[in-house]
Image (cartoon, rainbow, N blue to C red; front, side):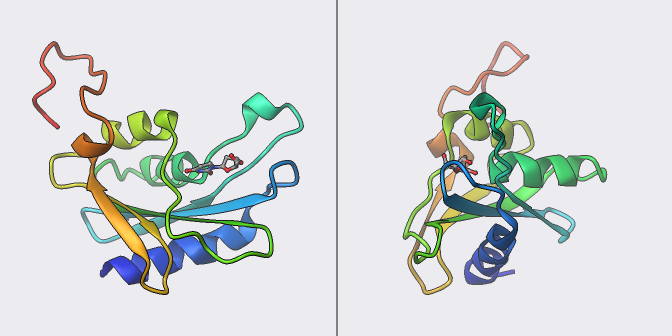
Length: 139
Ligand code: THU
């Protein structure tokens, strides 16, 4: 699975975004180490603090089907009716959730399927992530 293909799946997933408050539509696609793919979109709520990001929806779908190891996660976002941004960087909460199911090879990519994109390792995105173990050497 190439980066552009996974970004395309993230773009496609964003069509289901429920974003009547922010009008910002996000899609995420998680490629698991076994090759399976799970997608998600943001799901907002009139009680704003309950809004769910696309990344956490996609990861929740994967984990709830027994997939706990992420190879790559792609994120695409756009204003309603606009073009996909060159970057839709995950929020801090999502970085911590991505880290939970990642290893040193996991990549986070964001952008669009027109060729504008960038990538980070999870450690680059979230150095010194909180972990239950005392050391932070796994990432
Ligand atoms: N959002 C995501 O789904 N993922 C991100 O990486 C950034 C933000 C959502 C949350 C909210 O529904 C909307 O985008 C505006 O913040």
